[in-house]
Image (cartoon, rainbow, N blue to C red; front, top):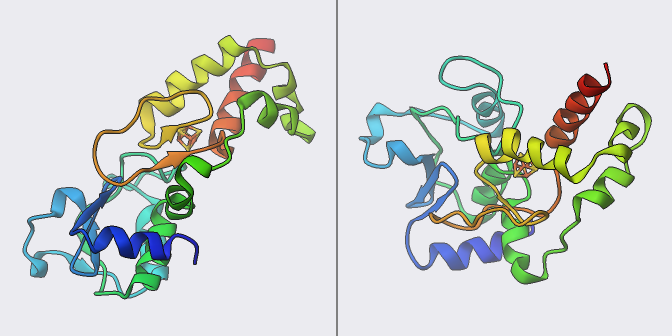
Length: 185
Ligand code: SF4
């Protein structure tokens, strides 16, 4: 999987943080459980269990955005080799390792291009103004996502490994469409 070698190199430097995940000793857990006793955390057996865990927050509410800082606490992964660690992290933060590995060579798609590509009910985005995009950025990205927005100059995140966003995600596109539709109603 892309990003595995990059991850292995970072882990060679010591334990690492990626978003809300703490990676140490070949295992993953929530960053806020970093100092918790192993026996106090529920072991997740496999990727299927992890996929269930990332679906909802601690209150049982659906998490539509993997980058949201609402990851459930109280679990730990098995001890995994780097390729499996990369697969687990790809469930938690899709694409993050591959994006980080590319670094400055990561292609970035401006919002205007993402908007132009939309079809069907999302064609509404063709008419999105920079001001409408900015409002959605404030409501969706700034208020509720840990990723660093490269496509519109978002602030760098201070802690941990890079968690990059090179292109407006589907959730952003959906929310932008909703606000455009509401403005037209
Ligand atoms: S577009 Fe915004 S909400 Fe979506 S992944 Fe990027 S930073 Fe997060």
